[in-house]
Structure formats: structure tokens, C-alpha cells
Amino acid sequence: MDDYLRIMTVTDRDIPLIDLQKAAKHGAIWSMDLPSNDGNYLLVGPVANQAGEIWATIERNLVGPGTLGAEEVAEFMDTLDQGGPPSAGRWLTDYLESVRAIYAIRIYPDAMKDDPQAFETIYEVRTALHKIIGGIGRWGDLGYTNDQDRLIWCRRDRNVTGLTVASMLDEFSGRWIEIQVNLDDPTEFSAFQNGEILSVMKDRVKN
Image 1 (cartoon, rainbow, N blue to C red):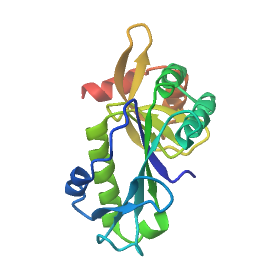
Image 2 (spheres, rainbow, N blue to C red; image 1 turned 120 degrees about the vertical axis):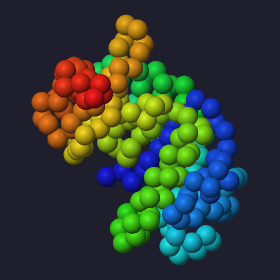
Image 3 (cartoon, rainbow, N blue to C red; image 1 turned 180 degrees about the horizontal axis):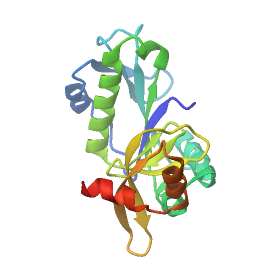
Image 4 (cartoon, helix red, strand yellow; image 1 turned 180 degrees about the vertical axis):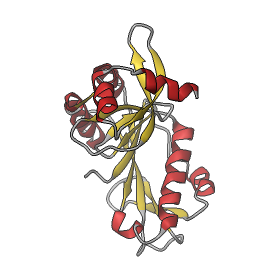
């Protein structure tokens, strides 16, 4: 299991610490210098400046020749044939080629499991960061969301569950069609993977 929530953007702006601190209403977020590299990374936990109890860290990795970010993007592109829909896989291939920065939130489930505030805080911080910098989301190794934070692609061999807001790409118009998919239903999951929109998926959005 990949314990990272990533946001990937075509710009490379700095992480907005002050804005994220305002968003973390159920916890704290602070900065720490990197000892071996330029810049810094952020830590998320119950109390600021308490390095002994960390729920998550946030780091910006630039994407360019020879960088860790470029290696990650190449790995992500290599796995797009392991899920669907196919149209989203093709769209993601084009998008990933233009990515300039990866904002990686590494979560520590063992540190979070006994404190319900931890999950609230990580969600608040991730949501605020996405609203500020935009981009697409990669949720561990489960799937991707578009700039509207709607599911657009997921792996076939992962246990994704629940009623989920999603979008299907119409490649002729370039428009995202909003749907809701019950990932617990094998028929709906298979249809989504294959790029098919069932009427029930569209009807949920209307209602």
C-alpha cells in the first residue's frame, strides 16, 4: 500500500504554509528545514513543533531531468495500463508529461489510528492545498482525481469501495461528464473501468 496522497501540477509554486495552518482546525502544521537539501518540508501533528508525534509530512518535489519527481512520474505512467477507463489513461499520459511539481503528503497510519482528529486534519490540509495550487490528485496507488477532485481512473486490482463522485472523459468534446459510481457494485465498477456510463451513474447526479 502506498501511504502517499499526491497532488501534481503544471506549475511549481511554493507550499503555502500560512494558508495550510489556517486550514488545519483539528491539528497543527509547521515547517522544518531539510538537513541535506535546500528548502524545507512540513510536518502535521496534534501539537506544533512536537517531532515525536507526526501524522504526516508534506514535501514538494520538482519534476525535471534527473530528479526524483521525474522518476515518480515515469513510474506512474508505466502503471496506467493496470486500470481504467482507457480515455482517462490517455488523458493522464498527456497530463503527466507536463507536470512540473509533485506535492507529496506522506501519512503515518500507525500514528493516526488512535486519534480521530488526525484524519480530519489531513483531509483539511489536503483539501486546502488542492484548492490553492490546483492540479490532479493521486490517492496512494488506488486512483487519480481530476482538477475537480472527482475520480477519473482507478486500478483494477485494488479494493476501492463506496459511492464515489467521478467523471468520465468524452474524448470527442474534451469534456468531463459528471457521474457517481458505486464501486461496491461489480457491474458498475466494470463499466467504469471499461469507459461505459450506465444510466444509474448519471441519474444519481441529477438527483
